[in-house]
Image (cartoon, rainbow, N blue to C red; front, top):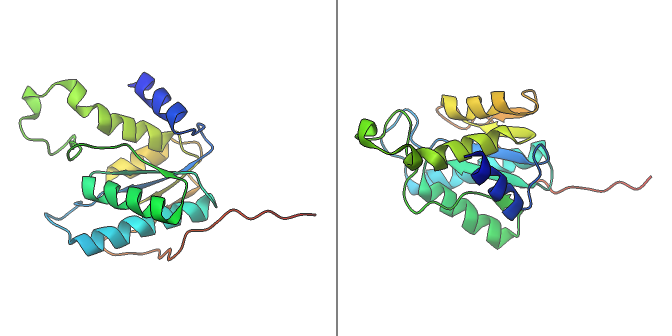
Amino acid sequence: IAKIVDKYLKQSNLTEGEYAAAHFRVLHGRKTRQEDETKHVAINAINCASELRPGGPVFFASDNKFAVDTINDYSKRKNLSVFSLQHTEEPLHLDKAANWTKRSPSEYYATFVDLLLLGRSRCLAFNSGGFGTFGLILGFNASCSVRYFSKKIIKSCPKWIERTTTII
């Protein structure tokens, strides 16, 4: 798994400890979430991460392929420095996967890669659930974080914050 993480960092031109991350657990405490709400909260998540690390780069992780695809499309349209793992199907949950005793450990690699990439970030925006919190604990600076959602948006981040240069 560490080799996969290192390969991803290199391919994405990310440096450990020099990027922010955002995690969005779409179905925490619920069975469904409307697509419009998923889009809104996912975009809010990366915008909150940009407040922690203006201009990015930002790594985005989610337990929902639609949320990841939304952020990939949004960041391309807006030319934002946002990266995420490409999922061909919904990522497996450690606590919710059907027939988990019959699964191969490699089926969970994407889940652990997401976790380790969250943990290698400098700052983290996260919502409900323990996965984002675990990534924060693994990270460089637990005080460089924001919980943006807990049953509803508790921190609104309406826009991406660009890096500014001050000349003295």
